[in-house]
Length: 114
Image (cartoon, rainbow, N blue to C red):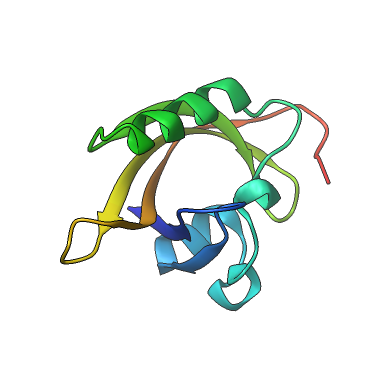
C-alpha cells in the first residue's frame, strides 16, 4: 500500500511516506517533506471529490474515499483510489491525515503533465 501522511491544516504539507508511495509517485520521501500534495495534481484531478472528502473528515467521518487522477514526478498519469483518514492525538485532537493510494490504472496514450 502506498501511504503518505500530511498536515491537517493549510495546504496539507506532506511529512512522510513509505517506499510503496515513492515507487508509485516517483518522488523520494526527502523530496516531498514540507511540500503540499498539489505536486501530484493536474488537469484531470478530481478537485471537487478531494475537497468533499477532506470536508467529511473535518466533520468527523473516520474515512473518506475518492477516485481521482494523480500525476507522477515524470508527468505520467494514473487513476487512484484514494482513501483518507484522520490521525488524532491522545486527546482526540486531529493532528494529521493519512492517505492510502491504490493505483487502479495507468492512463496511457496521453501527453504528460508538468
